[in-house]
Length: 420
Image (cartoon, rainbow, N blue to C red; front, side, top):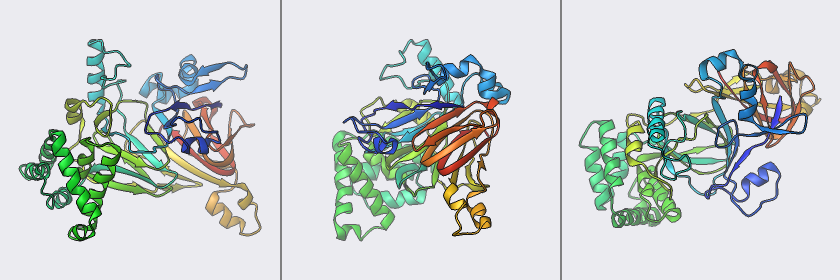
């Protein structure tokens, strides 16, 4: 096993305090948006070796792919770790975005490579050739926009609005079957002039802030108008604020998770959580950003037939909860241990075992694993390393496939990424 450090991302939407507090560090006045644990080429985790030297996790895996990944994973994904684990700390809404399918990612990346677009070019859409299905596990209350509203709900949201942009979007929505209607409505909103965006935001603000007008629409519709108003405060004039009318607003309580497959539009709004995804950094933006918006690529990638979203609480498995989305690259387990409570006379051994598992608790999965402590202090042991590693909140380890089974003790919680 190897203790690894996170790779800091200081995007402007990041919190200047939350990540520092979680990691037990002093704020430095700059935003700390994401902490990456993985081997993506643009942000691989540093690994401290026993001799005192440091390599990247990408280099460590490349030095012995079979030991690091195992034959099963190497055969499926080549000499690369197929997933990326992050801590996420937004202080304001992230860009509204979508991720491409594997075919779109391969074709888009190849085209930009062939055209000589530099990897760091702000106008580049594809950073790599992989798709990026992802999921977010809430450590605090977490809010976001996820997936298209069902067509009947979308009509209900648009009908009360008299602004020209809303009327045109409603007409477009009703002009075609469900998926085609959603696409037509989205295209109408994308083409709004700045003045039309302001007009539509202003009308939503009236409904959101005037109790008499608010009372004339269903609560979910009024909440949609409030979302537009909130987003417009952060991004005045940005079309993404009115595009939010098309999407579901989702609230995750701690311990809940939402999965976002290829083509699902989304924007994270607030909270603190763990994000797990395929090992990719491909983002196609719709709005709520000053970054590059590639409307053509975005429209191709969006899945207009998809609607709604599912909030997942996982499946109990021993001392863990498992989250296994329909992807081949990753699964997530969240494991709680409490050594003190398991040894306490305040409850029976049987009850303690049922709640927490007899210590040490064996973690599910095999192959290469990333283990991140998200609460308390724990000790991680493997067959190859019975001495183990102590992990406190915010610390992580990479476990090569060759290390075999893992067990956990202590008093805390870990999130583990592995290949199912």
